[in-house]
Image (cartoon, rainbow, N blue to C red; front, side, top):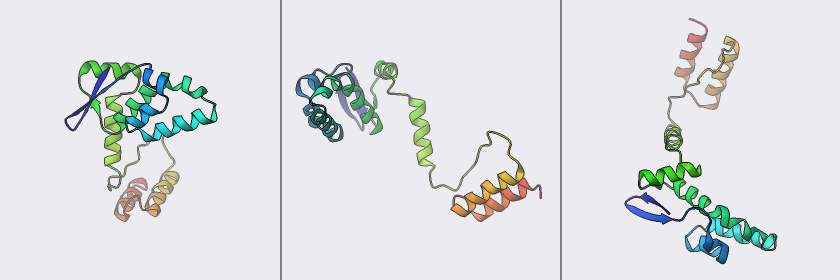
Length: 151
């Protein structure tokens, strides 16, 4: 069992094999409010003649924990965090970087990191495309153009 918290609320989540999913199929997902996976499990059970019901008990708890983390839940303590990292479902640095990236969408601080040296003409074309697409302003394009052409 691990504990996940969000806005002061705590959820106790089982890890490993899901006995409730084994015995009750898609119903535990629906009861937890995980409608998407409940419907997926029901659909797969119908199409596979019930064989998928032998697979989901092994993976459902991990799927549910991932969805809670995506919704903003975080481990309550360091032991919970270690269990999640060992399971491969929690990487705080990755999540923080993703949040920073999403929060920077739409800002005018558009930068391109050079991974290899480009010919000035090719680099200018890339900046011109960014300007045409509206990703950068005219002032940013003119500044970069003068830097590329060494004006």
